[in-house]
Length: 102
Image 1 (cartoon, one colour):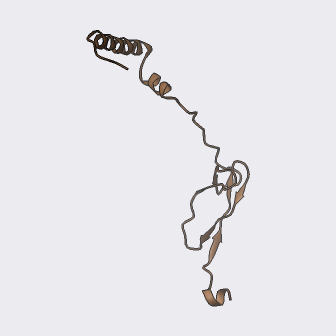
Image 2 (cartoon, helix red, strand yellow):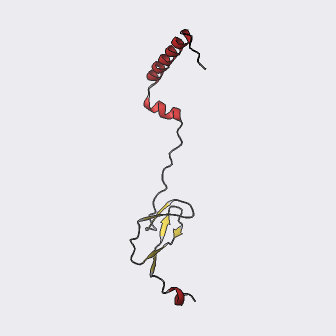
């Protein structure tokens, strides 16, 4: 069994990658494959590279932004007041004309 039935195993190359938490990952690559510069650590998910002395820093995590936060980035407080006044005026006109608004 084994190699006699399946044939010889392809030559492999094991490469060590290191993350910021000092985890070492050793994936196997084909001997003639192009070795990537970075790899995701399977233990913590941080990026890892080939340099054990200088692993890549953890990525900066951007906090979740609400819809209101995005709107505040696009509009100033004065613009917001003007838009609100315009919307209220339109609503008042619709109510005055007898339109049913839910």
